[in-house]
Image (cartoon, rainbow, N blue to C red; front, side, top):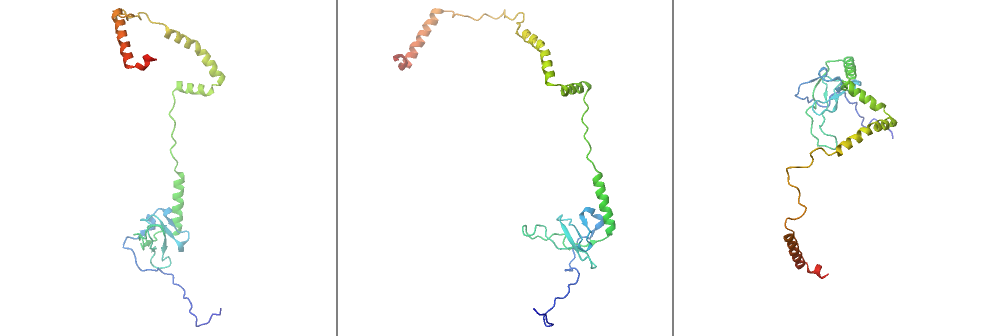
Length: 208
């Protein structure tokens, strides 16, 4: 396709802020933010974490007079509702240079790496407990069998003593348990009456 002078030609886009709107919120000073919330490795594509939505947002107007956060929403694009974040168009004050930011970031990383969790020291055992635990770890199966065989005589003595009846085990004050009913004739008569009642209530059993 031949290009002629009559065809329209795209003009070069000016590097300026797309909108002149500026948020009424106070300007964000880079020195007041954690160094890890700022990324100035590519100055023309600088980003920082928005104070309200906690997401990384580009800074627009890097070659202009006013630098501010680009308009953005609080939700995920294409998923959540399009709600404009309060941090949109908020002005940025570059009160620190890129070398100063690099040094602050390096210091923060060094400080974080130097932090170590406090080691929890185990509670000291008593000498007797320490000896018992050491002996338990050093015992072998053969040693356990030998220890058990050494204890068996004492176990047998304990069982023997447990079976021995103490002196005065038979109660002397309580009456003896009767082995026969006081009136044998009345008891037998009562048993015969109960047998008749059972036979009357269960005729099938008596017929068999």
